[in-house]
Length: 285
Image (cartoon, rainbow, N blue to C red; front, side, top):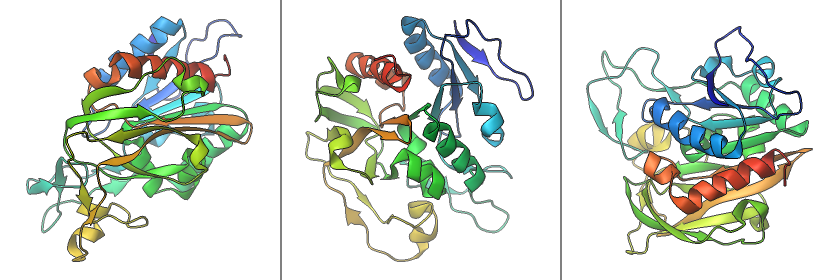
């Protein structure tokens, strides 16, 4: 029942009217959509629920979302309309980033405030929004998206082991989920809403910290304006918020930060939490 690809202008083939449906916007320069589809297909197969996919960020709109009860997004805020430059350096995402320069192109934002508003209105009306991994970077470039998502990503180091701690074991999303170790990108985040909504924190148990020059409001931060600003890098420590769940209007929102690899997506406790999150967002629990 899982794994359909939505083609622009073509409605998905729906099952029973009572079966809730999910649309997932996935894939970017650093995250191949294939591994995301494979990992999410397992979640939805085990839940016996359908899911459709799109890679087309420019199609995000009220008309795309209207037939669905849940919107999932695992992609960042960047596009390179004129291709990638050859001159690169390690940047905000712990990956090769474009510096720009003569004959080279910088990254651009893809989301518009109208698209952010579409997501906000979708959730306000009683639907669900599951934001995964690097999707918190999108909140850097849309006030509407941040309003409904509830926070944003600062930056992250390269892949390394860290511990995910369940700080709220009473929530339906974390039911039966134990603390776990994962090798992944440890995303450092800001959560804007009540701390009681925080479900997870991540901690580097080896004592490794992370530094960034990005500050809230800097746009793309480390590889954008902040890189050339001479601003000192801030030490963010070993521990950060890593997941939350809150209600927005009549709907619900979940964010979980893990997901750079299929191994991270399929870590047993993380997999259990993804299934819990889908059920909660669809108001099945």
